[in-house]
Length: 468
Ligand SMILES: Nc1ncnc2c1ncn2[C@@H]1O[C@H](COP(=O)(O)OP(=O)(O)OP(=O)(O)O)[C@@H](O)[C@H]1O
Ligand SMILES: [Mg+2]
Image (cartoon, rainbow, N blue to C red; front, top):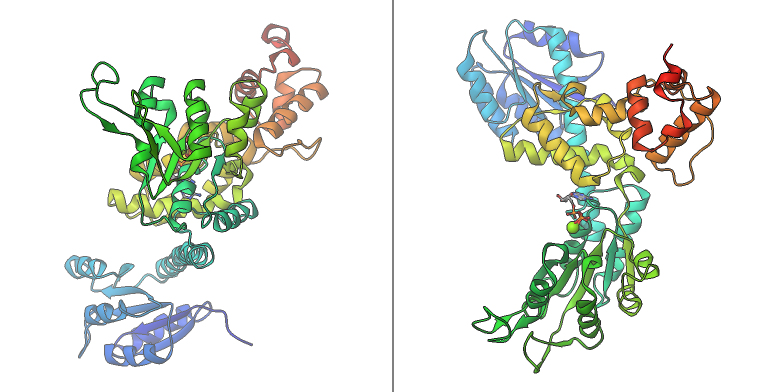
């Protein structure tokens, strides 16, 4: 049978140390032994090891030189060095050269065991993101959008298929779901990737500013127009034009946009000479455009022109399984940006995270990890590092809920499930909040807050009626 135990290479010139470590580790690991740095390299050239534990002071090649040599290997083993007690300088040097950690003599075997386990775990998740990046890159050419859940695979497939075509793309989805990242990916995967990518955020500008920003203006078009100015559409010539928050565009500009879409031509503000542009259009909205059309707030004809390839970015709560890898991705990023070395996130944090609704989606998750990395107090991020608002909103339902069944919500959203759960519990307990809270497994105070949030206060007894 093929062994699945990780391999540990022990390098020490002292036989007693080698044997002692081997004895302690052989239950959980495949052990290799080397009495010198040279011998260790010879072994590694045939047999890859997951972990190398090396003494520093040895005759011939010393531990630090061995470390430097091993760091060039692929796959790269995790290296830990054993230094004499109190030899801080060597330890620091080893860490600088890429050692995962150092141990002091005499080696505490329990500590060693924990250290190896932790190192292998962090290597594994890191390997997972790297793998995912590679897969997404190889399969879709997409490297900046993280996701491996079926709903995201669907999005990737559509992007891959539509990106190389000149088709207009409509990206919809709640705020923070990655519409702008998707727009960039589409541009990168299109034959226009060498051309400009020009983005305009419609909500940020007043109608008249937006108009001259998009179409440019002629000299003297309005007070302050002292010279002719090129608009963003012209700047995007030969490239991709990304129009963000298109639902906020004023009706007069909607008409002009329609013409750009149909004829790829327009006039600058204050001018009558038509300007032709060669652009690929991507538009985004975090409001449902079809609904806005139904309400008469968005032009029907414009909507149909935009609705060629329609991609909806799923909210984070519908792809909870992507949370761990997104977290790892952001952890790495913010460790790097803040010069921090947080090693990982304990699994309990993921439980809380998957019990939270993430109204701000991936952006909120990203900001949360940033906060946790900056303020993190330990080697790993744990429950106490989670911002209070998220812990309050999520933990009641995520951990130890006594809820075991009942009606299931139609859309599958956590908020809806929560609301249903609370309503059912209240009904069952004749509106008694204390009993309902107990049944759902949350505190009475939290229940009170949630009733307010979902405007369910009528279905519960008033505060006074219940106080006994
Ligand atoms: N799948 C993803 N993988 C990695 N990062 C992501 C992903 N989705 C979103 N992000 C990150 O989340 C943040 C918000 O994404 P983005 O700006 O694309 O959202 P949006 O849908 O355009 O939101 P809004 O409607 O508010 O403009 C960005 O920092 C982005 O890098
Ligand atoms: Mg956006």
